Image 1: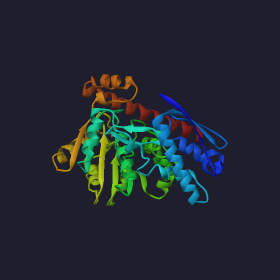
Image 2: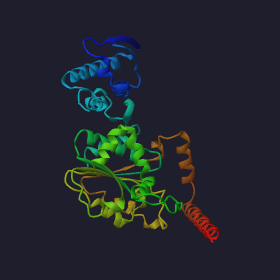
Image 3: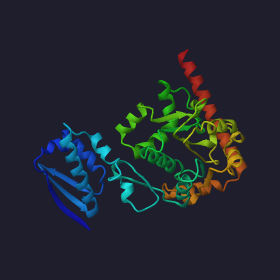
Image 4: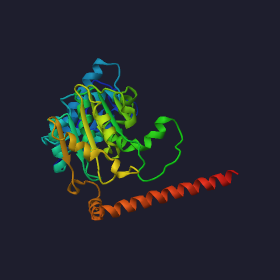
Length: 345
């Protein structure tokens, strides 16, 4: 049942709390997506459930107390408030599989049996493999666990990596500096982080090197201590590359490897070392393996049906189709290059 309540700010300038152009207030509202907040002078009118109203009042009173100690408040002060245990939504949620709260109060929760198994095994193992079909939430759940570990100061940095392998297409020359060339390959990782961390804070964490996103080749030679490291799209790594990555593990580190063995983009699919690597290490204490299925797919309902339909194809047919697609793409690239050369002449 929704309630209405009016809060009156007394003995303090409302603008010093709301911020310039209501920026502080807007940031505060972001943590309560189901609560309607209307500011009228020194009055705040709230409409929502009793729990949200109570928590909003607590947060507001904490901001007022902070304002009395500081010359002015910023949106960063609001964010810092919700980093504290008293206001963290995880502490107020009874679901043991709620992992972290994202932007605008979004609840990031393990929803399927395999996602929940990944959360359970995370507490008992330092190295996890999560393999299965597209859309089953492997990488998203792993990143949520990483963000939670970073927020709880269980690790000092978060590193996300994936091999820069084209998905059956020849993208050709990409303009820009090294970061601009590599970002298209890493965009899915950025998308997940933007769901869980405010953009300005994410940018600051990346500038400070606390959150790093890099291609797999950049991992060579590093020792990753007190870090949460995720290798995504691991089906596109060779056995030697996978070994290189796993041996980067330093003290107090957590590693998660995700991949889908049915979507190998290497020219020779036999070069993939993911499944062979899992079999080599799965019986080592401290290593956990979660095998996702089509039943874990959480995207559009059609995705699960599409995956099942493609899985019915014989392996040889899928391989032939993939080779034909790659050959066709290469032919188009060659033709385009010839046309470009003729035009230049």
